[in-house]
Image (tube, rainbow, N blue to C red):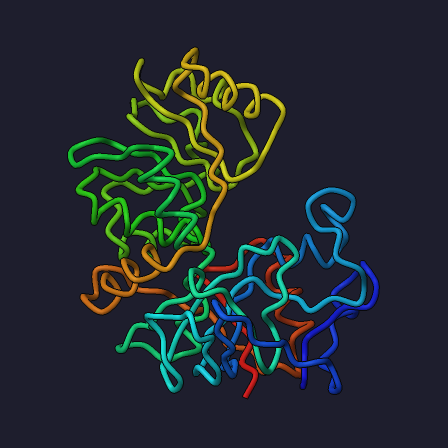
Length: 316
């Protein structure tokens, strides 16, 4: 089959669409889909550059890239109950090194769900990792409730633009931080107040919050000590030593304000996202769809760190 691989760690030019890659074998609890498109995430770029290669991502090179995928089910294991051949689906792998950006992608049945019916399959491919991260950060780590006030730092990117919408679904008051050029976009997502990060950096906003979701992850809870209420929670997408200590203390009951979101793909949450999308409460914004021949350009796009919403790579 064809696959999007990298043989060496390094720049975007290392990404290649090749033929002759072995097709995955079906397991009793797995699903194989003919891939339509793959959402692209910052994690894909880090993996391609060799990050985590000595810790969490030890798969040998060459590797197939990609954490997110959408497509049409081609094969179903005999223990799979909620998916059948021909279904349009979307999903994310929990395998840290990825491996879904290929002609036939394999997922465990717990990592895949039927795709939303009201958006193109390529748009559906952009949802899983970013929207699951936003959902699990706000609901599970941040324990966000209706009427609470949340600050989302980095509100116009993949995770951030989903987080603004999900926070509004939960009934929260949302303050969002982004660049000036993306102000109107973030307002259109439902944010109650939008702050230009150059004029009003997130950690200097004169307000207090029940939850700070630092999508950028460049700071720590301490930087937001004045913005967090006494019972407030700080959630980051990026592991740092200070955040690890806070997370460890939180698990011991000593501290309740530091959380690190570690996204996990599961069919129940994917189905929840599907429902919100079909009800038009959650709208994936896709800035650009790249043909697979321009996969390296798609990687460079993510590397600019100025993506608005999401991008994806179309395989067919």
